[in-house]
Each structure stands twice: as C-alpha cells, then as structure tokens.
Amino acid sequence: MAVSADRAPDRTPASARLRPRAWSRSDPAAVLTAARHIADELKDGLGGAGTRAAARGVRRLLDADRVGLVDLSGRPVWAPAPPEDERAAKDLVEEVLHSETKGGRPPLLALPLHVHDELAGVLVVVGAVRRSALREASGWIVDALERARLEASAEQAAQAELRALRAEISPHFVYNALTVISALVSSEPDRSRELMIDFADYIRYSLARHGEYTTVAEEFRAIETYLALQRAVLGERLQVQVRVAPEVLAVALPYLVLQPLVENAIRHGIEPRAGTGHVQVRGEAEGNDCVISVEDDGLGMDPVLVEEILAGRGGADSVGIANVDRRLRNVYGPWYGLVVETAPDEGTRVVVRIPRFQPGVVPG
Image 1 (cartoon, one colour):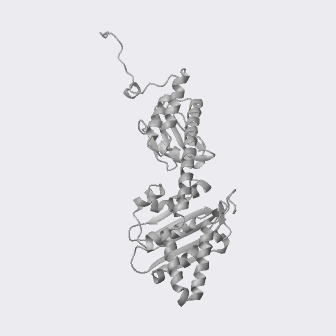
Image 2 (tube, rainbow, N blue to C red):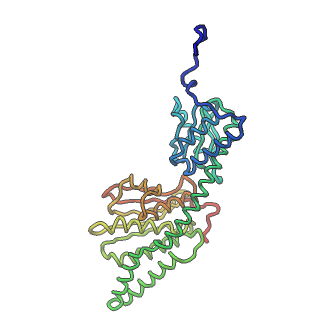
Image 3 (spheres, rainbow, N blue to C red):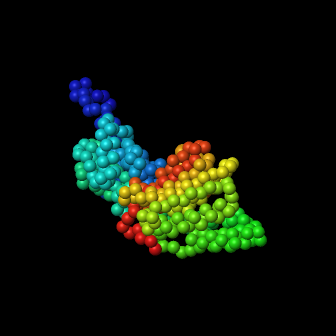
C-alpha cells in the first residue's frame, strides 16, 4: 500500500508505540481470562517463577507503563523493566512494606497486598491508571495468592505429618542412647536409671499430644533432657552450657521450636568434627522481645546453603530448621523468624527473636 507523502509524521515516543495493547475492558470474557492467567502464574506466590509473567499480565490489563510485583524481601519484579526513577520506586516499596498502607501518587502508586490479614507483598503501578482499576487488580492478585497459600498449606501439612511419623525422632540417636543406657546398667545402675528417665521424658515430650503453643520453660526443659542424653552418647566430645533468664520462662512460643535447633547444632556442627565441641543455649529478654540463641563451634556452613535451607530447598536433613523458620513467621509475622550467622569452619549461631507477649499465643 502506498503511503501519502503529505501525511503528518508520527511524533509519538517509541516507548509508547511499543506498548502492548490492553485487553478491552468492554469484553468481560477477555478480562476474566486475563485474571485467570494471572492467578495461574502466581500459584507459587510472589517469589515464584511466574511472577514476571503475572506482572506482564497486570500491566497489559491496566494499560500501565510499568508494573512491579514485590514480595516481602522488597525485591520487585518489573514488567517490562524498572522505571527511570528506580530509587523513588524502591523507597515507596519500603514505605508500604513497613506501613502496610497504600502510598504514592500518580503516576507512581503502590498498594499493599494482604492475604488473610497478613502482608504478602506490594503491587506497584507506573502510569495513568485509575485508582479503582488499581484496587480491582490488587484484589485479583490477593485472591490468587490466597488460593496459592491454601494449596501450599494443604500440601505442606500432608508432608509435615509424614515427616513427623518418620523422622521426628532420629533412629540413629535413639539407638545410640539406648545402647549407652544398656551398657551402664551393670557398671553404673544409678546413672543408667537417670538416663532412662531422661529418655522417657524426651520421648514423652516429642510424641505426646500438645497444644499449638508451649512455654520457654518447657522447651528448655526438653532441651536439657535431650542434651543429657547426647552427653551420655558423645562423652567428653560434647560440652554444653544452658542459660535462661527467669523473666522469659513464661513466654509462650510454638511447640517444638528450640529442640530442632539444638539437634541441628549437634548433628551437623559437633558430631562430624574431631575433638571437643561446645554448644551454648541462651534465653534472655531484650525490651519487649525474648531472644534465644543456639550457638556451636562446629563445622559451620556456607551462607548460600543456609539461604537454600531456609527457603525449603536444603534436602531432607535440613527440614527441621526450615519448618521452625516458617512456623515463627506464620505466628509472629514476616519480620520474625530465624537469623543464622555462620561460615565454613566458623561454627553456627541461630537466633530466635519472638515477642514476649503476642495476642492469641497462649500455652495449651
């Protein structure tokens, strides 16, 4: 087709001419299809592989210049690319993550994404987009995240029950403990009797039916029982120090949170190394928080491996620490959880920080 020579030149910016065409808002079927595709891409949450595709879908649906989806880490996934003033967008995201309220003004707006009254992330939109459309889009995203969380929770619950049946108590540890106790029956009957009582207490606490929450005092009592058995197994190779401040003994926390951390320190830090290893467990108050640390001078780990473990990708031997981190975040919010300080050959220190008082967290 010939082009008229007297046609006015197109002075539209290249970025606008390359902008993808939005779905027609007058076509309900197309809008619903778009929403379904976005939900499918978010099946693994805001940190999943489909986040960028979901951001592209939201951008196209809103006819926006740019769209960012941000998880609780604060790292945005942009479609098609970060805005020119990326610093302003980052500051806005941090503001919304901390305030949990909408922020910004056109052409840069951000809405918090709440899933079951918990902050799950932030939707950032750059461009001339109506606030009503932005609220609608954020609602679709929240619905998708709620569905994904429910599906993930069901799967995790099924896996957790199976793991609890198979590996809540290490068969290796049970065998070693009973072997030591049986060897002491003749030579040291009194100590054998004490260790058998400790073993019974350990089994009862680990397997008995508990409420969802217990107290720091009960968790430390279980830890001391477990450590008594481990000292009998490892002998002089294991040196232990346990200190807990009286003011935190009554603090409520999820059941069986601390013992996996102590077990991890011994199994992966102390047992594989040569010579004597030390484990320190401390609990103290810091303002309105209770801070509990489990520290060993064992082999340590690569920090990159720790990130994989906390993300649930560390393999069967590291399920315990990932479960503890996830349970703490679920109970107390995304700003809580485990802090792990480690390096190869430098030992490991795991810190648990929880509120001393949390509504709804009551020992059962």
